[in-house]
Amino acid sequence: MSIEIRSSLLVGQPGLRIYLFVLFYLGLLVAMSLVVNNLKIIRLGFSYTSVGITAQLNEFADKLIHNFGHLLAKKGFDPAQLPNQTYHFIWTFNLTEGWLQDLATIARLDDVIASYKSQTRTLNIALPLQFDTLVFSYKYDRHVALHHKGTVQGKINKVKIDCQLSYNYATYKVHLDKFDIRDSGRITVHFTGQGPIDWISEALVNSLSLFLHPIILNIIQLVIKKPIGHIVDGVNDAISNVFVP
Ligand SMILES: *[C@@H]1O[C@H](CO)[C@@H](O)[C@H](O)[C@H]1NC(C)=O
Ligand SMILES: *[C@@H]1O[C@H](CO)[C@@H](O)[C@H](O)[C@H]1NC(C)=O
Image (cartoon, rainbow, N blue to C red; front, top):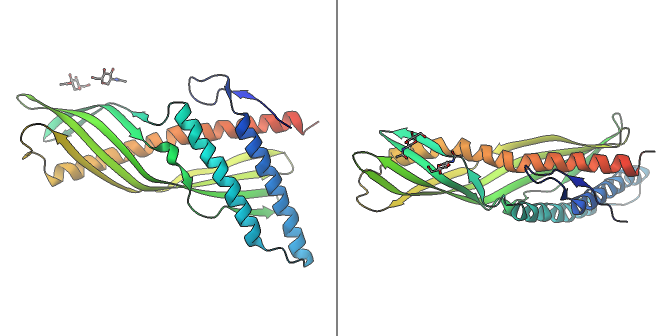
């Protein structure tokens, strides 16, 4: 069976084909059903280990996330553009041509855990995600009497995301319950440029790090969360077309 749907998945990309993701999510649903059935088996006393289920879900999630990374790269979100900024610390710095790189390296952080709640007939999936290292850069223009130009480069390590999805067996809907940055990671920044560097103090570097950190987290949220939400919507459309009479 192959299903193809079209959706305006990413901003300015109408008609994007996301059939691969639909197949993966349908696979996920099958996997979820298996888990539910297996929980019943466990209750009946058969020796099916939850370790086996976890391994299957992990393997499945890895494929899903890997393909999501590919899609981000293909659609021009790796590198992702960072907005121009004006920054004040003793002097004024104009920050332009900002880029954030390696969003496509999104990966599973930990075991994928599925749990079924019989009262609400929902299967909840916790999908912990991580970016190991993201790199970014801006061109800076510091205006004193003259312009001092150069580049600020930086890294942000170990950004962790709590992603939770659920499937409701009563409504046939997948829902994105949560997409939160759980750990905002560690940021480091350094300046490169020509001329004397005595004006680059530790206080300046620390202050700029604090300034850029939320800006970068915001771009991560924007770039990653929206397509996941659109994929969930697309999957729900596909489910309602295929499974619901
Ligand atoms: C810096 O940015 C401000 C605000 O966007 C602008 O008015 C100013 O002309 C810029 N200066 C330089 C040197 O680019
Ligand atoms: C950012 O700054 C650059 C250089 O000054 C300018 O060419 C560009 O249009 C600006 N982008 C936005 C979105 O303002």
